[in-house]
Length: 187
Image (cartoon, rainbow, N blue to C red; front, top):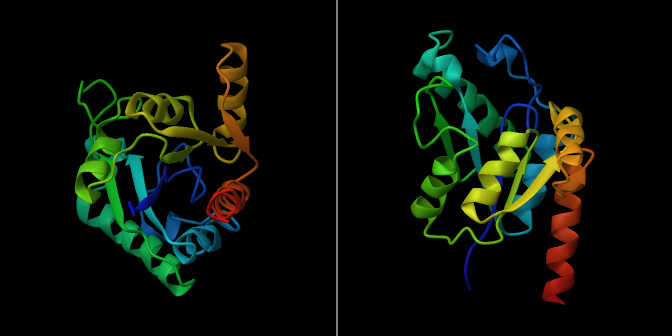
């Protein structure tokens, strides 16, 4: 049986976003229910990975060791809730760098698929922005939008352009749906 995988964006999905960037572990604050949602995915047998643009590194607002400390805090919170994050990948580049890893390109998702040996076709990819949705589509995944973070603005933009996307109030709601859906298919 192949592995079940869900890929999450970080800022605005797992933790509160900031226009000033998340620059320290103290500034990383989880959205209510997000840590428990990741734990529920783990308990249901899903691998959970995180793919996140982190241009604050390229802008020199944050260095890589501090970013790793933020990710350690996130992993600890998830572990303390009984879950696991299998893999975290990030793009440290500036928006105009032309790299393949910055969303809306699909490079981060492809890294995760390669690392885990999982085909990405139909893999739920949960984000809060138009670029998350575009990257998920480009990777062949199943784009899912949450209305936390930038999600309300993204939903309006996608709706205006006639681009349908599965949408949920937050990560907890999306996870409940995915777990129920998996159980129904497995029954």
